[in-house]
Image (tube, rainbow, N blue to C red; front, side, top):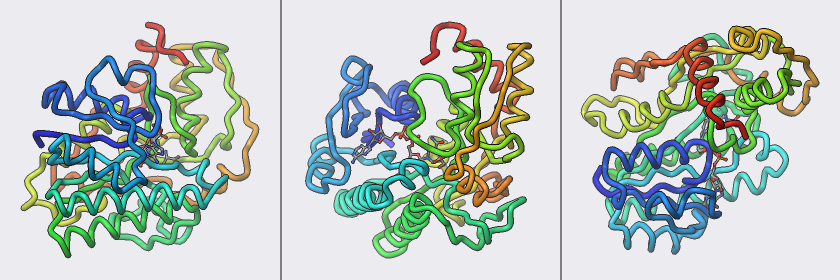
Length: 315
Ligand code: NAD
Ligand code: SER
């Protein structure tokens, strides 16, 4: 990776990934793009408004920047996708096709985040294997699974260096999450600091995989730097760091906010999505093929979140 273009750079992941890439590869080498401006984009390095569904615009941006690697983050997430499935299909598939085509022409490597959303109720729940039955029940999951297959196709057919991770829910401060089923695990921290209480849209014992953002960013960079000769799988690797339920994270939060209170107003749509996803994924392929190892568990995630939120990162 020498010259990098990031799509969807203003979102929850991009706002962490772009600074990390700029630290490692140089500010001018990383072009951040998004369909919208966000607060910090212009001052921190090169930024361009690019609608990732516009194949011509994506192609021009990649060529002008002379990118050799694209981190393709632009997408519609699970809860928003269930509100507008056609939008999710359009954005997630058109943008991926645009990125893969320019990558084929310009010989770029491509990172595409997939998701635990590729799994469905017929997948074994604990753990969900790397190579599993995959019948997703959301439009988001349908696009993520189709995206994995398309990435593998471009690798097999055109030798495009495509790689991806099935991210679990991601916990972070800074840019808020963009409308997913796992957003509760971010909201809960902000509400704990601001109000000392949180009303959760999932039930108390709904278990899903999670990861703290510094681990997620490191995982993406390590995968893209991994020796391709070691990769049996490519699109995409199961990765996880911890399993959380609203009740278990509330208990971690009480270590820092002893009077923290949680109650529940279950949203049937997001509860249905969460219930169709695994309780835990098996990430042994990532550990074996490129050395994946998380650094943060629930306790260290909560400690670090509160340290940063107390410094004023509450939104
Ligand atoms: P986000 O919603 O926070 O950010 C997505 C960004 O894409 C936004 O800045 C948005 O403006 C931009 N975008 C939307 N439509 C666009 C378009 N047509 N052209 C250009 N940009 C567009 O999402 P995120 O959490 O940063 O997720 C990034 C990727 O990681 C997505 O593919 C998502 O599916 C995947 N992922 C995220 C999580 C998570 O918990 N955050 C978990 C698994 C996978
Ligand atoms: N965090 C994402 C979502 O809930 C999972 O891909 O949509």
